[in-house]
Length: 69
Image 1 (tube, rainbow, N blue to C red):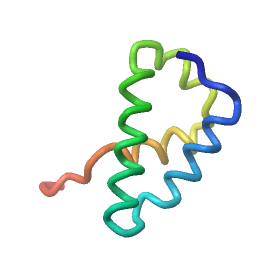
Image 2 (cartoon, rainbow, N blue to C red):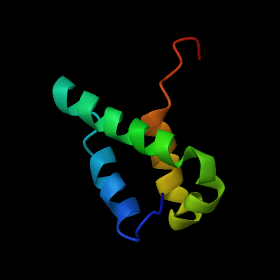
Image 3 (tube, helix red, strand yellow):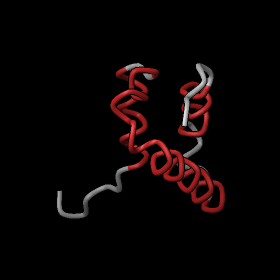
């Protein structure tokens, strides 16, 4: 899979709504998880399309909070 230049910003728009009501939140997290799954094999290349801030935001949304922290 390729990542067009507009995709990182589009994903950030989704991330902005990752704490919206339950149905929206679940849909966004599912879409982001699917993106991660389909781009995992070449992530070392794809990550260069994102800024460091965008990578941090994606990680925050995709990684479940630890209840033991």
